Length: 258
Image (cartoon, rainbow, N blue to C red; front, side, top):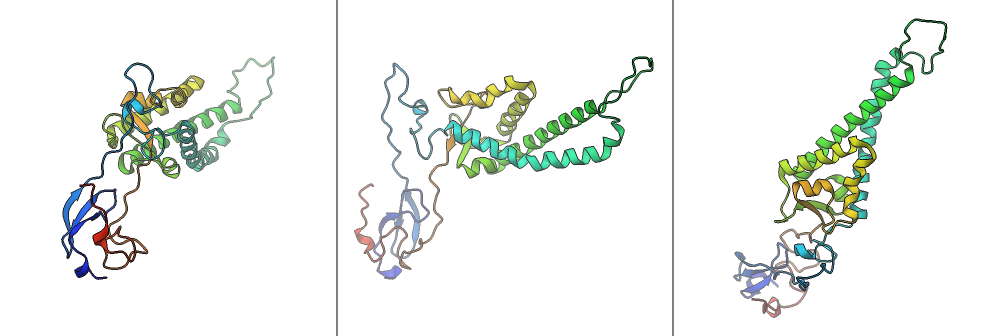
């Protein structure tokens, strides 16, 4: 079947997304009809929502739903694994440069010697490790800010198919929110075990937000349905509008959704 034999009509949009696009008989036009908005049953105004995210218009599960806390924590762990080589390099270089100045790790102490002794070597080792941890955290801060602001998510989030978005509009965070979100998480790690409240807060929050999400008004969702690239998908006969069943006349495609 050739383009010339395909009658003008509304067909599934070859660019994907679930809508319709008008075929004028020779080429696709710019006239499109967006897909119908998904319907989620309302919940009573009084009482808790039936699932987390219902009050935001989010589905209970699947694409666009609030990300499961386990996937959020897993993505965070994967991102930190990426920082292990950074920490190892910083620590190795620091020890190679400064280790010879540390002195004995556990020096002998003579109680009859009134001279002031230098700090033991293990103290300098501890300070070196702590400094490398802080520097690694700063690298993590820069990495997360750039990844979220420029690409919408970090590598760990991408591997688990989740992404942070704005609470109200669902749009990308931008540079300011991405930096604020990463900086608050980094600062929470400097206050010891109390800082664990930040990443664990999503376990019981009604919007599955961590504390850094609440500050910048963000949520983390499952990836939306990917949009297919324009053109005929594999298996479609050449010359037929994408989305038409192979071997079927496009004129039989139902366009009753208009």
